Amino acid sequence: AITSTTLTSSSHTKINDHASYQSNYLKRIGFSQAETDALTSNKPNMDDLQRLLSGHLTSVPFENMDQHEHPAHGDGTPLIPRKQKLPSLDVLQSLEKIINRNRGGFCFELNLSFNWLLTSLGYNTRIALADVSCNQPVPAHVVILVEDLIDVPVLVDVGFGTPGVCNVLLPVKFGVDATKEDLHGDKFEFRRDDRTDRFDT
Image 1 (cartoon, rainbow, N blue to C red):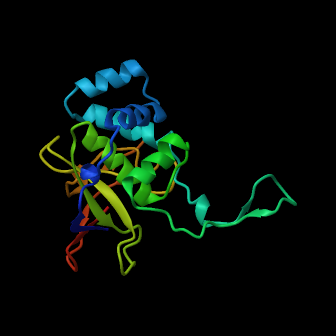
Image 2: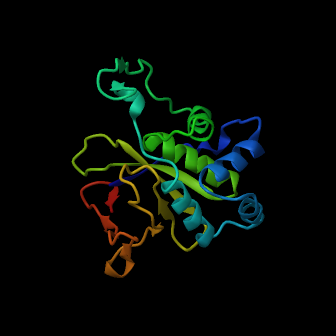
């Protein structure tokens, strides 16, 4: 479920070396320098957005390794202790983790970082609170809504937690004709939830 409430966009995060972060982020998700030059010269469009989405999903994993104890090298090795500090929602720290440390993250880290990349490329975006399960009392997920590419917002999600899932742009339209299918055959559609101010996908 996706709520009508939106969070403040991360596009206002002040990053001193903006061009370097953007270039290295694109390199991290598989874009060559020539592809980066072409991408940055284009106006925002659906084809490039799909390429960015696919590149991110196949390059940056959903992971929460910092929140668990685990051995470094097989059996008998002392556990690496779980970090006492919770993962940060600061976009700069998430960018550092993804770009410079070659790591992934959980949904908030991934979608806030990808949102930063999109806004740096000129996309008009919003971050929306969401649920993975409609039974959750409090939204525990976030997604990105990209505006102004077509006649309705387009939902993008790089932080769902299952590799390859959601590798499809999802225009926020209702009805059978609006059903979208990804490369794995998973089908997505939006349904209004009349009990709340939410809609489901």
